[in-house]
Amino acid sequence: MPKPDITSPASIVWFRRDLRLADNLALDAACRRGGPVICIFIREPGDALSGANGAAQAWWLHHSLERLDQALRACGNRLILRTGSPEEVLSRIADETGADCLFWNRRYDPDGIRADTDLKSKLREHFARVESFAGFLLHEPQRLLTKDGRPYQVYTPFWRALEGSLIPLDPIPAPTAIQAVNTPMHSDSLDDWALLPTKPDWASRFSEVWTPGEAAAQSTLAEFLDGAINGYKARRDVPAGRTTSLLSPHLAFGEISPHRIWHMVRALPDTIPIDDTTHFLKELVWRDFSWHLLFHRPDLATTNLNAKFDAFPWQDNEMLLAQWHRGLTGYPIVDAGMRQLWRHGWMHNRVRMVVASFLIKDLLIDWRHGERWFRDTLVDADQASNAASWQWVAGCGADAAPYFRIFNPAKQGETFDPDGAYIRAFCPELAKLPDHYIHRPHEAPSEILRSAGITLGKTYPHPMIAHDFARKRALEIFQSLGNS
Ligand SMILES: Cc1cc2nc3c(=O)[nH]c(=O)nc-3n(C[C@H](O)[C@H](O)[C@H](O)COP(=O)(O)OP(=O)(O)OC[C@H]3O[C@@H](n4cnc5c(N)ncnc54)[C@H](O)[C@@H]3O)c2cc1C
Image (cartoon, rainbow, N blue to C red):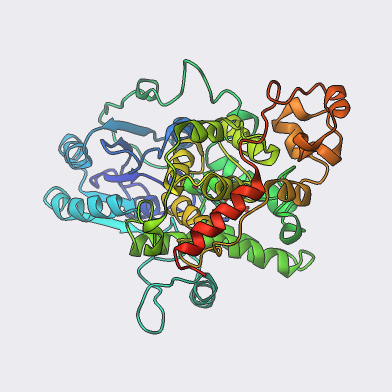
């Protein structure tokens, strides 16, 4: 680290979806340059730019900003919070402090790209240097193209191309000291941003599972590499217990770099089966694949990639949608998943697929309703992964699940949650059912229901639709679209 130079003008580091000190190329550039560093987070007018995609992420953002500020204070600096258009805020700070360099890490959502491109040219009037860096993804989404120069549409060749060409960024340790400016600077109060829910505090149980911030991201990774990675390939579909990394919200806020994850996984001893490590890295690359898709199809969250689906006769039924939102469908695995989402702002991947399939194929509700609900309720909501995954389940996306794959919720439960541990955790009213009926309470004899304290239609709903009927209906519709 170069010696601080008190005669240098200040540099600004504009934090966005990179709420970390380690592996932060923008921060590293500012520190290397020498002189004071102004660390800023801007509450922008548009949602989902640097901020939260929805209400659950607003909770996360509050805590993550708090932790980032603490980490900066430990380095002798602090996080400045401001509200407004980045152009105005950043140029005002340049005027206030004489800062002449501006660094940020790139964002890749369509609005973010547009805003940053515009800003770069406008802010050059105020700054001698305006520079952006990589680090949110493993690859720059415009870099990889097929042999005929097109974006990838199929995952496996994308994985091969990425894996074959990736030179992961070297890990950069967090700085231990970051020189601050001498001028007193105004910062908004985080509490005034009112990111936390109050009446009611529906996020009160998020902290049972989550600790936002960079330190927790790193310890979550360490714990995973010390435990669940061993056996990940076989166990990752089991929703009960700690079977996956739980890194998704940390990645969504850039509290950890995917490059660091890649390095650490590749550095594991060969006592961890290569099948497990490769499978995990492949999952991580699904995130990059999704961003690759979004980069080339900015309308990914709104438009069927397969235009045949434009003629799909979706049912507009607010009541059915509300039952799905609330986890009152009468299918335990679906209800447990939707209630896990309420309780912890997160849902296990297998269950996300099951609840999404149920919404789209059993209820015939447009996948875009599900996408929006997840965007609002997931702490890991990620514009690209969420939209791509919803399209994937619907069958209209890139490399999508075939339309005839319609999950049978009860069978999915029996396969992946055979002892019902997941159901019991999130649907306590079913906890006393024997394993045999835990995924099919509506098939349980009345004396079994009685001794488990269940009255169907009262303490737990009847199935809102018969799955066999719904499956047949969906297949007929899909076939009529000419997808067979
Ligand atoms: C309908 C639906 C919506 C989804 N919405 C989101 C979303 O908004 N944000 C999000 O991060 N993931 C989303 N996913 C993907 C996946 O469910 C989560 O990434 C995963 O459950 C996160 O848990 P984990 O970190 O323990 O995953 P792990 O199994 O430990 O995987 C490691 C990392 O790989 C990435 N990853 C894994 N699976 C996928 C995938 N299918 N697509 C893209 N990236 C993946 C994530 O960054 C994840 O943190 C969605 C999946 C479905 C089916």
